[in-house]
Length: 130
Image 1 (cartoon, rainbow, N blue to C red):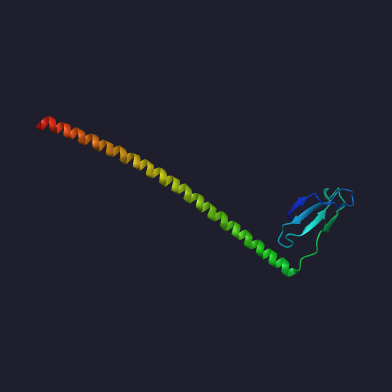
Image 2: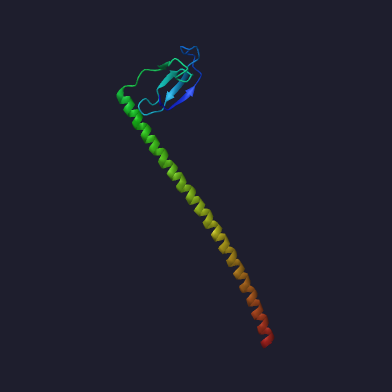
């Protein structure tokens, strides 16, 4: 049986082979959310015990649940896409901040050089014309 499910061994139902049956929740679209019991042994070793833990959903409920599940999955995909965009933007912003910092340092160095050059020019003028 290929049913996506989650397992819980908190149930007290016993399998026909004497072991406590595992309790699962179906995650496939057709029976999403339904609970069932299953023998804990592999198919070839167990006796094939399998039983629903609830009543079957009406067809309309299955359609609504499946539709809501698809919408949820679409929202999760969109959320992940937006989170990646945010991460990319933040990385870009960090690069911009680093670039601005480097440019500011270069500007400060150039301004210091200009001030030093101006001092030398004034000094040389004093020597030449003074």
